[in-house]
Structure formats: structure tokens, C-alpha cells
Amino acid sequence: MTAKKIFVHTFLLIGVIFSIFPFYWLVVMSTNETSAIFSSPPKLVFGNYFLVNYHNVMDNINFYRALFNTLFIAIASSVLQLFFNSLTGFTFSKFKFPGSKVLFYLMMATMMIPAQMLLVPQFIIIKELGWLGSYKALIIPGMASAFGIFWIRQYALAIHDDLLEAGRIDGCTKFGLYWRIALPILRPALAFLAISTFMGVWEDYLWPLIVLTDTSKFTLMLTLQQLKSVHTGDYSMVMTGTLLATIPVIAFFLLVSRQFIAGIMEGAVKS
Amino acid sequence: MGGLLKEIYKSRTLYLFISPFYILFLVFSVFPIFFSIYLSFHKWDGIGKMTSVGFNNFTYMFHDPNFWQALINNVAIWLLANGPMLVCALIIAYVINLSIVKFKGFFRIAFFLPNITAMVAVVIIFQSMFGNEYGLVNFLLVKLGLGQVAWFNSSTGVRVIIALMIAWRYLGYNAIIYLSGLQRIPKDLYEAANLDGATMFQSFTKITLPMLRSIILFTVMMSTIGGFQIFTEPQVLAGNQSPYPGSETIVLYMFREGFVYQNYGYAASVSWVLFVIIGFISVLNWKIFNKSDD
Image 1 (cartoon, each protein chain N blue to C red):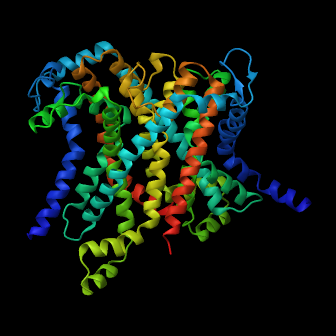
Image 2 (tube, one colour):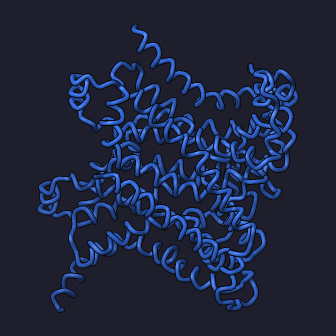
Image 3 (tube, each protein chain N blue to C red):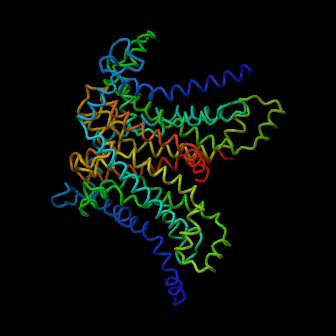
């Protein structure tokens, strides 16, 4: 070990501590009483108040209902996005038809519109459709995305035309070519898309805040915000709720981190 | 012409395949764009009649000190968060990419982990470390002999907290993006520089930075666009109260006008000004980075 090696690793470890400490702090707070944390010196080790805090959370919010709502919306959105984005992306990559270029560039241009721009009119459309307060308001507008289509198209460009030709000779319809030949090849691209859609829905806050009206339909993030606003004093309980809402994504991320990080890196190079 | 129609007819299944995106696009983007332009010249509370007000929404905005304050807050938070964060991200990526570094996979995951944490959770966690009198950060400051800071009483204090949240959440994300660019720089460039006796700093400024220009542009653009969309941080921080001093951003200002006070027409005009600001800064970024090209 040279001095340089030690220096470089120490530098990175300090960075890692900065990255990880808030998670550690989250667990510390969730396992202690609020007063222990605001005492001087503050407690920095795990306590044994987790169960008390947990029961307090459950008494104040319907955590599992919110978890179910979030999972339902996230899974429905991911499945729909996978289907529509891959079908559209595949079509753009492997077929030429009148207007295909123009339509493709038009789609790419929509990525330039910041989401917050259209908040007011989109809200009014949702209201006019009578979707205010329903899951539909969260799932349907996000059924397909320009980014997802672009992502799949880039990947689908690599599918060999011979494969598709063989499929055609075997009597595959256009949809058959997509379903039987393209989809299996696109699996890695779909995995990243599914993960990023799922995470995006999980953490989404502004749009659900606007279109959801009934607390029984609230997502985890809205429920957390509600818990925090009402019980400002009981930090340990709010942090316990936060911990419960964070653990599932962290577990999910650790399972798929390799694919996810690879996808992010690829995405940056492509854009 | 008949040929084209025939061609279109032959491709009808293909149009069907791509139609879902375009239907959504028409309903949730194209129509809203025009509707929003229309709204921005009207006064409307969402229930009653719309009244045409010409440019009044815009003149009101430009005379509203709260709007300018929101713009200042927004720029301050954006600079405070993204400037230092992007520099640190680049250094971290550079170091992880060094051949002597072990456990690269671990470092990548550890630095990336904050990015998957939802912003609402980030706000709750960070808020709990700061307080006007107590709190972990003040305890440490006192221990270090720096004295406590009444974080939530001053604009600067609140902005620093928000900037820290953003920096924490996006540091690893940007480092990963830089890393992807660094891995594409051919190794022999560095070897050649080494042979010529270049220092680590020289090879960083003469090879790494120029080779990364397009990736750096990408991250600066993304954080600019993200910076003008800051909403969750100040909103969740304040809970159901009005925002803490120095933290009302443009989107939060628009949100409050539209969804708290039901001034939909006015909120729509704010969103157009936001659009122009983001567009202007994006073009500016583009120009600056492409100028230094040659």
C-alpha cells in the first residue's frame, strides 16, 4: 500500500460517510425517543424505541393502505409503460412509414417541455374528465413516455433485420414480430425502464399532491408529508414513518443496482 | 397522392402501434400548451367565468415583489447547491476511475444510494438535523466553537439546508454520469501524458476536462432545468405553513397562486415566464460550452 493509495481510499471513504450518514441518522432516530435526540449531546446510537414509534405511526396514518396505493400505481404504470414504450420504440426503430421521421422528432421535442409548465391545464383536464382523486389521474397520463420510447428505440436498432425477415417468412404479423422476436431481445432495456419508472412513481410528489383528494387514496409520499405536517413535535415517529417508506426502495435498489447504474451511465452517453 | 394514401393505408397497424403516445401527447401536452397560453391572458378561479385581462397577469407579476423574491431565492438555491456539488462529483468520479482504486463497485453504489431516496424523505431527514437551538448540526457547531445558528430564521440558513439536500441527493448521480464519460477516455492518452512528464493536475485539466465537455454540458443543463423546478424541498420543509424565509421558489410560487389561492390564469402566466427562463438559461449554457470548443 503506497501513501497515495491510502490517501485516495480515505478520501473516498469520507465521501461515503457523507452519503451514508443520513441513513444511519434515520435509523438512530427511529429507534429512539424524540427527547433523546434533542438532548445535549444528542444520542448517536441505536435505541430500543422502534416498536413504540412503529405503533405510533400505525395509530396516526394508514401506512399499509398508502403502501398498497403506491405499489399499485407504480406497478400499473411500469407495466403500461413497458408495453407502450417498447411497442412504439420498436416500431420507430424497424419500420419506415409516411411521417415516421417527423413523428419521431416531434416526440423527441416533447422531452424539452418541463413537467411543471403544464401543471395547471393538466389539472383542469383531469378535473373535467372527472378523474380527480382517482388512480387514473396518476396512471393514465404517464402510460407512455418520450424518454422510454427513445430508450427502447436506441436498443432496438441493434436487432438484426435477418431475424425479423425470418419471422416474416414464418408468417408472423407485425405485432408477432414485436411480441415474439423483439421483446425477448429488448429485455435488458426493459429492465432499466421498469426500474426507473417504478422509482419515479414511488418518489413522485407534486402531481399526486394536486390530483389526489381523498386520504384513502394517498401515496406514501403524501402520507409522509401529512404525518410530518401534523406531528411536527414527534420527530421519532415521523422518522420511523420515513424509514418504513424508504426501506422498500433501498432493498429494491440493492437488488437491481448493477443494472440500474449501468442504465444511468449508458443513458448519459447516449443523450 | 394516391400512392401516399396507399402507403399510409398499408402502414395502418404501425400507426396503431405508435398511437397511444400521440393520443396522450395531444390530450396532456398539445391541448394544455394552447389552453395554458389562453389561460395566461385570463383571470379564472376554476369555477366562475373566465375574464379576459390582456397582459395584466404579466404586468402584475413583474410588479409583484414576491415574484422577484422567488426568482432570487430560486437562483440562490440553485447556485448554492449545484456549483459545489458538480465540482465534487467530478472529483469523486475522477478518483473512483483511478486504476489504483479498489472496490469500485462498492463506491459506485454507496455514492448513488442517496439518489434513490425520495425527496420528501430527504427533507424530513435533513430537517431533523437542523434546529434553531438544538439539533445535531448546532451541537457539532458549538463543539467546534463556532456557535449555534438559528437556521430557520434567516434566508441564508434555510437556503443552505435546501442546497445541502439537493447536493446530497444528486452528488452520486452526477458522479456516476461523469464516471461514464471518464471510462470512455482512451487510457493511452493518459499514458502518453505521463511519459511526457505531465502531473496529475495537468492531465486532469488538459485531457479529462476537454474530453468530458459534452458530459459536463449535459449535467449542467440537467441541473439547471432541475434547479428551476425545485418545489418539494421548500414545500415539505414548511409543511402546511407558508414557506420559510428565502425558500419560496418559482414553482412553489406558481403552485401557491394556482392551487392554494385558485388564481389559475395567473399561475399559467407564471409557468410561461418559467419556461422562458429555463429556455434562456439552456441556450446560454449551450453557447458558453460550445464557444470554448475551439
